[in-house]
Length: 628
Image 1 (cartoon, rainbow, N blue to C red):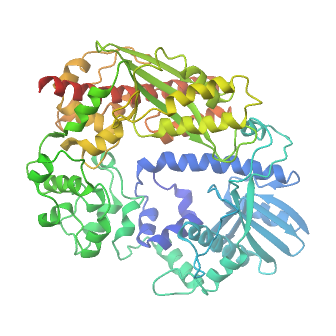
Image 2 (image 1 turned 60 degrees about the vertical axis):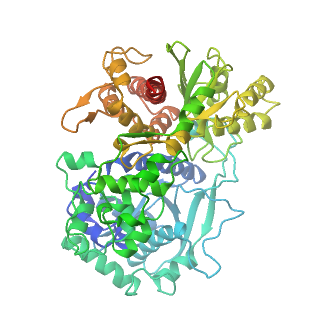
Image 3 (image 1 turned 180 degrees about the vertical axis):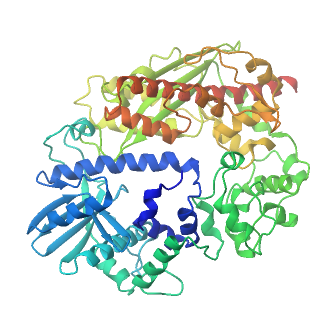
């Protein structure tokens, strides 16, 4: 995920923001270092929502002119031409000053007064919003938006010093609601008329002025002026020179901290490059276990002490192996960290630790066992009338049912974009799963229960509009009110992730409790899963799939979610955020028939694997119970 050559032509707000966070990042952007592929789905989801909001904004100003030029210089010339008029409303206006570029989603000019609008996808509650704390300092979550606006305004003022500018944030309003059903599609139609007030405007002119005049919220430790800061960052970027590294806790979420899979493909990690150049960690490498990878809190304390690698953590600061292995109490984060550190230091740790409560709870589960997973999305433009931005949309479920004899059956449903409201339709379809009200329902995390609670609230608010609302609510109550299986009283809606987090350890899980890594870890150690899944298996969306495959080089089972990608044609879905983005495109009806078919197929495969992974984990635990 490297920057394109065109990006290096101009300094942008994105580069300005990166330089404020860490000037060394500008070196990596200038030299096209790869970025972490794991953040791509989040960027795509934010981009999708931003695109939807832009269309919504354009509907508020039907007289507005969009700057369509793809070439930046041509777009800047067209912007200048349009601003020569006394009044103008422009979308995607472009301003260029000394190799710095600013692009505005909305500019409104009335004589000499110009309002610059900065559109962000972050939701705001107008009844509670405060940009500053009681000391007058910007809250961290708003600071980057003010800095972005300061950069954009600075560039624009250099182009038009004779005009008077004000700055305004446009944000999705948590307290607003759509006036139309399927608004996400209505706004796509050419010439569509709609009356929506889903965006909230915040005048940030004063805050931006404070930053530009260095009256508050200084940008760099040496307190340069804004213009000096910008000049230095611009020079750093275009020179491509190395900037001295200041490593610390800020590096934890660096976009140049690429995944191990990328390193194995020969890509160079900027994160590793930074840490290798410091005196504090001369032994640092891509495979070295960083304290950032420890599960749970406490990392900042080691960073402050100058301890950056797990192998350098003093053993006395963490629990001993015997106290961890012998205890039947739930794992603490310190115990998990202790096991991670022992591995990093080359010490022997158990292949598995399976604590007694796991078997106790499995004994409570009544058959049939229903392994349930939902896929959901939150979109800035609501798809249903009277819904606010980012209302949860449940568009898919998968359910593997395990019977007492071990036999499996699979049921699934997915909205295809043209369906009735998917949240309600999901409940209707879920009721059709055979024996769903009998036995035990198993989820991975408490998301499914929470989602059903949200749907219940929606139905309660629309009793007069939905014919079967009462029946759906009554059925939902029977599911929602179930106990987790740590309670002796059934029926149960059990949380498998809680059992993993509290009572299960596998040294192959590394630094993750994600189902994707847990299932790979159990496949690596389980003879039962090897016997059952090394033969081709048939599923609802898989013809002949061998889920147990061995990686000779890494000496571990291959991750099923990596195998999944090889089965998906065109559209790849292997993470929840990717599913969200993919269904958003289906919702907006922006895919051709062939691509829509690929997208639906990819979603079905992904969701089916999620519940099959839950089955595999439980089958492994059951096999351990049979051998004890």
